[in-house]
Amino acid sequence: MTAVELPRTAPPDAPPARSGGLFRTAWTFPKAKIGAVLTIVVVLIALLGPWLGPVLTGHTTTDFAGKPFKHDGVFGTDGLGRDVLTRFLAGGTTLLLYAVLATALGIVLGALLGMVAGYGGGWLDSLLMRGNDVLLSFPQLVIALLAIAVIGPEGWLLVLVIGLTHAPRTARVARQATVAVRGQDYIRAAEMYAVPRSRILLREILPNITGPLMVEIGLRLTYSIGYIASLSFLGLGIQPPSADWGLMINENRIALVVQPWGVLLPVLAIAALTVGTNLVADALASAAAGRKREAHA
Image: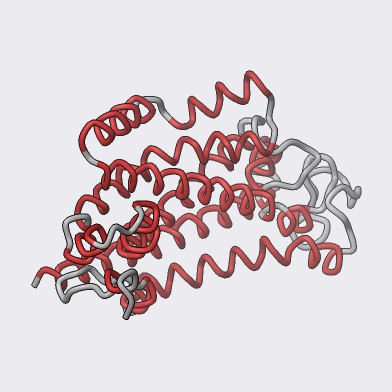
């Protein structure tokens, strides 16, 4: 074994470096299975819906299918006479895409910031975390509303603002996890062999904090879905005539009693996706906590 490879061998008291074991442990919880089923069903609807809709209904998302708010077809029509089922099947793709991109941006930036602060310590840690606390003092939705009011309801802006507002919260989790592992023997061995700090962060610390980060991904994805759907409902997110679940709720709420499917279908889909990702994140958190107790036993 070479001198550079030697630090990769962790001592027995080191936290598990592989996330595969974390997923296997989490899968033993019933809530993980339920959450995975709910999430997969909604994701499949979002991904396959735009192609299935016209095949099943014979209408596109903008076609006139009948009189407004009538029960023509499977789930009737909306306020402009468009088929509700077609728009519902096509309405989750953009929401899911924006939520995943915003979550990825927040996790990457937050993890890098947290690892640098936690491993560097001293004045660098204090400077980064105090600036992080300032950003945390502003509500995420307020920042998003302000940015949209200035620039406009652009898709890239939604991803950027939501992702950036996720980063400080992820940074706190990443920093705490980094501080917990930076004193381990395999980190000290890497430092003794003069391994560059960037390699220590990416090859030694990052693999050993994947547990908390996996949990954080689930939580941030849940919040991203809620924020994007809320902004679309307010008319500040995805714009008409695009099919979007949050936008559908806003467009059809005036006829909830007469024609409820235009509201109920997207509400149920968003709720199922949110509950599903929450259950998976909770199972990951339980698995990570159990593995941590075993590591210190």
